[in-house]
Image 1: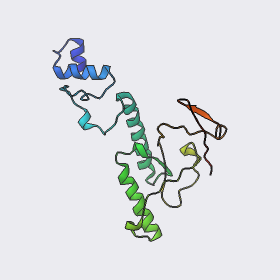
Image 2: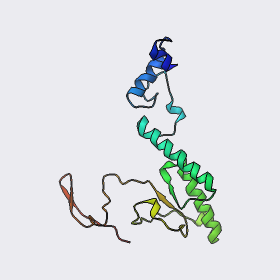
Image 3: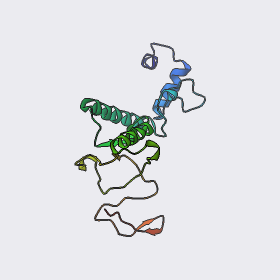
Length: 165
C-alpha cells in the first residue's frame, strides 16, 4: 500500500505517512508514541535502529539455518543472536548437569574469557558448557597481542592492561 501511495495510485493514510517517516529516519515504525503505524510490538527488544537490527536478523536466521542443518550443538554460538539467550544457557546447564551427574540446583554459570578473537579459532567443543561470542565491553578496549600492556589515553586518563591465558 505504501508503494501505491507514494506513486499516487492510492490516498496516503496517516499510518502510511508514519511508516514512510519512520523508514526515512531508519527507525522501527512505532517508536514515535504518536505514530499510528506500529511494528515495534512485533519485533524483539533492541535499542538499534532499523538497518542494524535488520542486519542482525539476517545473521540470526543464518545461525539458526546452520544449526538446524547440522542438528548438533554448535561449537560456538552468537549469544546476542538468540531470541531468548537465557533459555539456551539453561539448556546448557541441564546438559552439563546430566553429563557430570551434578544436581541442577547446584549448577552455576561462570564466564571465562579466552584470547581467541574469532569463533573460527575454536578447534574442539568446550569440556563443560559452551563457547559464546558477540559480547561487547562498553567504555573499554580489548587490545590484541601487540598492543597489550601499552598505555593509552581515554578522555585524558592513562590506562593500561593485558589479557593472559
